[in-house]
Length: 177
Image (cartoon, rainbow, N blue to C red; front, side, top):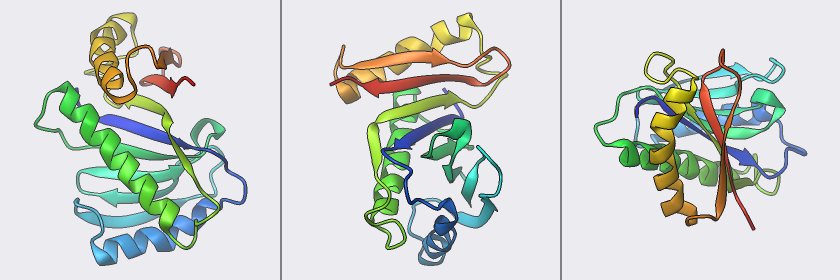
């Protein structure tokens, strides 16, 4: 598995201005707050249902985005990892979760932004390796199921393929009560 994206959804988007992430992400660059080489910040907050504000790094991008009109933190792994599917999923999930926890603590977002680590989306961001077909889904689903069984417990979540064939292969994941 390569080029995995994990989006952890916000519990609420009331009172959240994604443009407030701009100074936050600049601070992260200045302080070298993440393990990756952080490069730049791009503001797309003016684009409806768009990528919001991106923190561009060498190995991955982070964005506070509104894709499909749902606020969340998207971790977009660009560099090929060196692990197996479980390690790749774990790395992407942990990086996304860590960024969510940091954003929640930032003064710009304290009391305004909370993420739900049990409500997420996984996207396989390589149409050549993972086209949005039944065959491709059947290939990655067992690995994803194994990962989320370990994360939430077998039978404790719903994993559902989403989208249409022209989109990237993606699935919604939600822990059940």
